[in-house]
Image 1 (cartoon, rainbow, N blue to C red):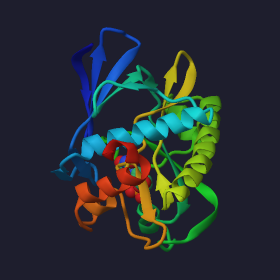
Image 2 (image 1 turned 90 degrees about the horizontal axis):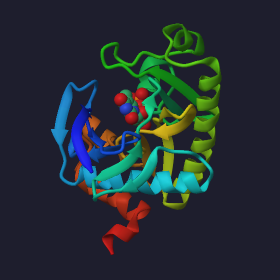
Image 3 (image 1 turned 90 degrees about the vertical axis):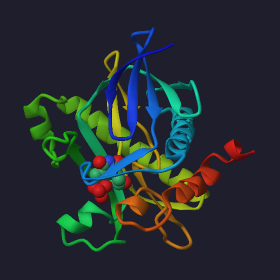
Length: 237
Ligand code: TMP
């Protein structure tokens, strides 16, 4: 049963339930970019992202990766484990795009021979600065063992997701993962969706993700619908 709101983020709201070990994550139509400086709404965005995330979490679970996903309680609401979020955003990068091309002399489209793993401090207040292990441990946000585990899970997820998306006609330049602690165990949390991944059409190279909104490249709802048609065709039947 959905109870009071615990937290409202930029794209999702988290609610308590009558079970202290479970939360409900509601995917909303609101979206922001550039640390919330750019804000908007897109029809059905929450629906498509919730459905895409559900499908990817289920696929990862089948591959032996633990996630916080439990079940859907509505089209846009996901029942999840109430985890303690690790304040590290892990970004596996396969092809250079976005911030890495602005911060370093790396050209967009450069294919990395090995995935480039970027760890950022999840903090709007500090503007998500890049982390290394020592800084994360010094701040007390994770232990060396946890960071090692998070890195190896992220690498494995990157491989699985890259192959899964190739079959659906997408390249995966990069994506962002969050992790949480569930009874001492590290599990994937948050969402894996058009808001948190870069999806490039394999034949045209066009963006089919939140870059549409970040850089005014077109109709976000239509684009997310196209992604949903490839990943969750069953919701259109
Ligand atoms: P970036 O190139 O802007 O650093 O983004 C890298 C990836 O992380 C991209 O797939 C989008 C995702 N991302 C988020 O999910 N949340 C964020 O706040 C940011 C900045 C990026």
